[in-house]
Length: 78
Image (cartoon, rainbow, N blue to C red; front, side, top):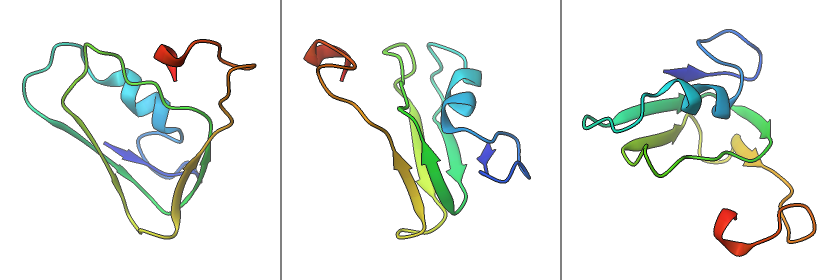
């Protein structure tokens, strides 16, 4: 699966790609994330342990999101 912020790929959000991976998968799933800044939290459920996120560029692929106890109470979910 490929994610690109400009929409020229399978998905335009990382969460959208993660959501498409079936739970309890045994084979690893790799998501390539193209250069760009992706805003928002990415939640990978416990049922999806074999997901690998790979950035196209170490400095130009950024996943960022605001997360703190006021927005998302309880340390378990963070």
